[in-house]
Image (cartoon, rainbow, N blue to C red):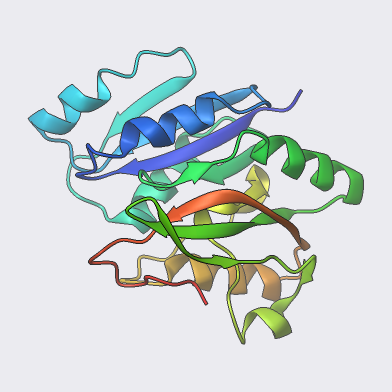
Length: 207
């Protein structure tokens, strides 16, 4: 079985972090490591994250606030897995998310897999986004159906292609860059990811 590294940046999200971590620990595919990047690194965050005692979890503190892009990049550098997935600290996965993705990636020799997702606010589904089976640069440049918390990608790709430190859409920029390099993308049109709509988000919708 191949190891999946799940990277979770953390910054002032005491309310949701436990549910997010548990949605990873409850995956039907269980050969995983969870890398939490404590980008708050305060007395409060140290106390909150120290509550998560599990041999699959590793926690790294940043010396100063890096922002989500550089926090994810640090997670990539610390990862040991064959594949990498990202999960924001308030998003959730369905139980079979990784299982379905790994099965598809193995069957079709895919580099990058993403899923359909639902966007919620206060536990109410506001909208959902379906996943086209195949996507390329020409289609991706017109709209972005890919939620960062839904992806699974070969780690060797990300070790050579990091997020740029942008104020917003840093994930979309990376998807475009990878698509332009002709890495293969495949979507699974099942809602396997729950995306939390954030009140003050710079990007409240991926499309």
